[in-house]
Image 1 (cartoon, one colour):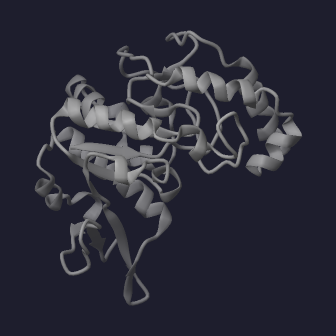
Image 2 (image 1 turned 90 degrees about the vertical axis):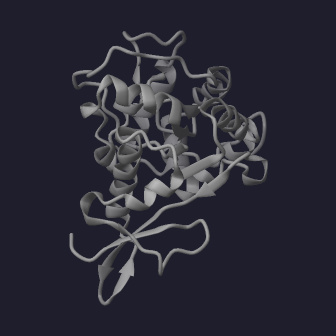
Length: 257
């Protein structure tokens, strides 16, 4: 199985690194084209485009200006240890063993507005550029047009290398829209996580995001290779719900937090 997740807005470039293993992202030539466009944006333009405060827009203007190749352990950090949002709280890569990192490197990918597609140990520099940003560029008026079929092509390569045709979509709609489903050589399984509230099961964003990370962790640490094994996922009290599952949207529910 290959699993994909979204990146996070929050970043951590300060804490202790639990591994020295690194790799290089494969799409940096495209990232450099985006950086050339982004460094032309003023802080005010960034604030308007990304709906950021003056402080954050200034920070991200500086990040664009400081972005430089080549990436090294001195100026960059492994992607899975740099992102620090709800999904990554559930994933908890800081507790991974060497075997976990090795399995993740083959079976886990992070979608990114700037980097396209990242392996967990790919070095990256700090940035803020969400996939849904309507940034005009040399290939169109937004990042979906910029990336085109490139991300899908990379996913197909990863699927071929890891030996099967199942992709577990643990990404948000905003990010998975960058994948051209008709061109993807895989069956797509999209887990949904729902909690009992006011007499019915509902998706609660915070819990669902963390659960995506927990499921990624479950796959990696158990080194799952058969999609049917996913139905045994039981972290944080979630259970596979056959009654609510429809086709390839697999629903996992829990009644008590």
